[in-house]
Length: 157
Image (cartoon, rainbow, N blue to C red; front, side, top):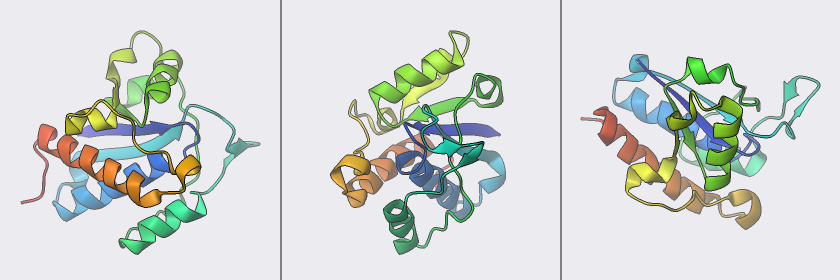
């Protein structure tokens, strides 16, 4: 089983989009039982008194427009304990990689990769929090996930 954690700053836009898009992709490939997929934040700014914020409205609308529900998802903070629970931490940008490595510690730092590295790219996933372009974020995430699934041999038939 592949245990994958997507990581961004606040866990309300890019990382939950990636989480639910990948869940949809592996379900369509008949491989949902081969994956455990979550997402988290490197910051606690979207978690108040232990309760995480829901997925940001425009990100939710973007997912709904392609038939994907993220109902019930709440932001959570990446912790050192996650380092032992997950095989791979797919980060949306360089700052997320650095922060995830700091949180997870030296023992698990090598598990942190940029999502777009699986598409053969060195760039960051477009951040719709600043650009308001959720379609660009979706396209970046989709490219990264397609490359990931090819790497793992889990693409749809």
